[in-house]
Image 1: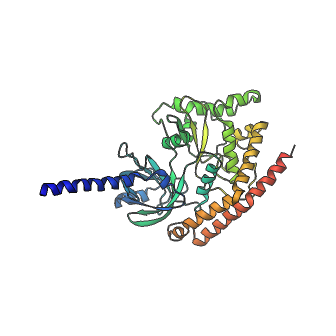
Image 2 (image 1 turned 135 degrees about the vertical axis):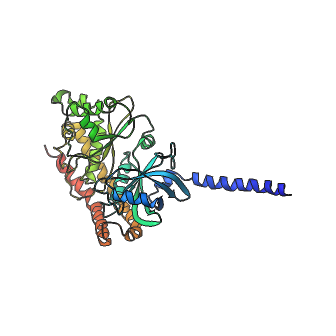
Image 3 (image 1 turned 90 degrees about the vertical axis):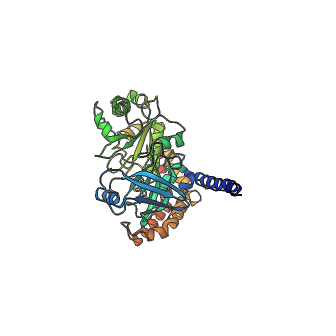
Length: 402
């Protein structure tokens, strides 16, 4: 009897365990980056290590934590403080690496994710809206959603869950692997000047995200050669030589979308180039860009279409070619029409701000008041109502300018 009862329970127990496991594995990155959900993420960190992270928030030291989303708990992950001006001890911006302390470990197939503290965006939705617009315009961009973050069961406020731009991202958006990916690191204003033949200045600006252990000559020689050719004095051969190292139509397209979004800290930023990733496929010297960190977008609905156009060497010289200049106006026009179509941009702002409204108001660690949140959203709505008309009118003027 006892033996029969054990064998009867065994299959049931196995089924229960299998079903639970299947339920967990049924979750996907599409679920995590569902922009219609405010998720809940919980981190469990040793209290001493958490205090060390707060005390040393300007450092990139990794600490051990457990990460939980829905029914999935990933143990022994690595977390560290991240960001530039967004770093702070109260509401830390975090990078989560799933495989740093446990080789081969992933979460939903990802090796890392960013928990952005939305410290510099009083609207909370500018960056996610900008990234959604890049996607709407057919460009590869990291996915974003929102969460309430709890650290050791203490609510730390609204965070953006941001897809890490790494080899996983490249495989998702381009279907390829083995390429060379670099994160641009802002230090001083850089406008695409040639920094000399030594590789060190380029290595300082472009941090390798893949192939980190390969020789600097392999990693950085094509980047050095890119900016050498960008600054080549001979206009007659400039385009042929530069297009060996950068996809000019893609660069112009990226710049046009940035400008439509009135991005003040992007490719044509107020302090030089910023907030992008540089990528080249394996076996190639030709680079392209991926967008990053758009919380300084939407600064003004009358943002000039040629703002700082003469400062960036690559943009200035590319715009000397009639077809690339025409492409720039075309993409801006497409942006204006796409944003206005069925009121998409305003609807997206309304949807996202309504989604996070309650969680934002309960976020006592944010550096903005609830009134400032409301005012910021109102300004975004005004931008959405006015930007497309302004852009279309300006393009018409500029196209008629000899």
